[in-house]
Length: 394
Image (cartoon, rainbow, N blue to C red; front, side, top):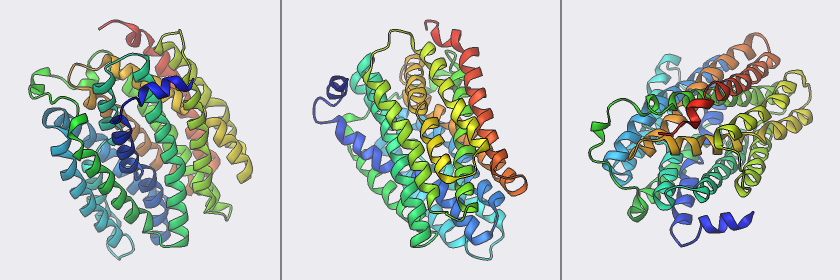
């Protein structure tokens, strides 16, 4: 099992851009929970908190594919530093405005600005892997590595965010996130030797990448999984706070991510003979049982047990979907294709986070967890509906 991972890291280049990518996208797991806790602490509403957090995700869903299209055309080293500068400005504005008397609608100017500028670091790193390894089972292992890094991020990040928000200051997660994005992002941009080739004639490719080669179905899968993330993440934070133990919110989310990391490690190290689209259908089913059981829990320990069980299928699903996306991406548009999938997650997350916030305020966490369970059914249904599109030759 470990031999495939050793092959992926052969040489001295991959570990550098993978490490820089880890640092730069650690804020992804901190900003959402940090904004949620900061706004709720200062303004006393999960509805407003979920809406502000969700607006960042919606804006990122719009800006991510557009900026990634520019990256494919101009290069990561030209686009990424400008994005970082814009995000730091908008994030600092939010840190100052959230505790002020400024009406809540004004917060959306900077939350949307931050989201529009936010780089899809995961897509940038995965496109470097694609340029390095081209295709094949070792590339899928590389995607497994990045998926496990994503889960490590969602173990470390929420814990940092929840702890610093409670123990230091509600704005601490946002400030730490800005430093991490700037440091890791600028380091990644400086690695010119591992950048994918620039596609200067990209404008000739025509319609958006998600409308080609059946990728619209894969985009739907990512919207559904984003709904799952948004509903469950918001519900976990609210459940632990309502139980009088808010610091356990980040810990339970870290446990959830650990389950996904474990699933990704096993999945990435094994060799499966069945095609990726069939693997995708099977792993999508793993999310449903434990997520459904969350609807009926009433203790934090039980929530933690179900969180690790629900997490086991997340990384395998994202690894398989990344493999299909890479295989079906038009030439020279891999970054845009992968970023578009992340945009789907952001759209689903934004909708579910806002809806879960409303359900928590008006109905309770049982209803918001039910929204997460419904999202897992959507995920499975789309993998089945799109199976023929994922398997046809291009």
